[in-house]
Image (cartoon, rainbow, N blue to C red):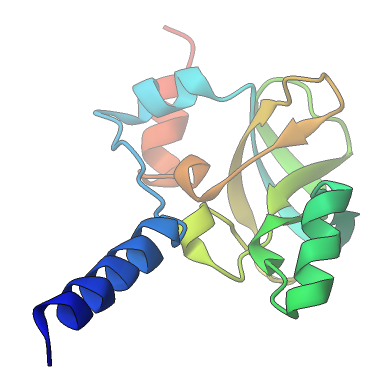
Length: 155
């Protein structure tokens, strides 16, 4: 193989690797339940009563290019999960609350998936556009329910 051919192949490989999207979810670990609770607007124990996709939140150009290439990015589709609130630990989520989140198909995008059934401790924050609440893989409880109860107990 000639020097020129080898250089061209290495250059093409480098361009391909540079063009690949970097997918990684990196969450900072909170030092305590109190620190993690401080970042959440609502904390509650609840059960999933409904779940499903919100719809494709990507721009029309990305949707079109994915249709052309046949390579959709499911990790960019948001789900909305509605919880029956059994107990409120912080905030005022109401009797039922809908929480938006990137679906859990790819944890690299910090997506989560909630299953029906058991009671879950949920930490969520108000969306920047004020359209409700959201959560992510990074917002999942890093401490036990009791540690959150202790951290949120009146002093």
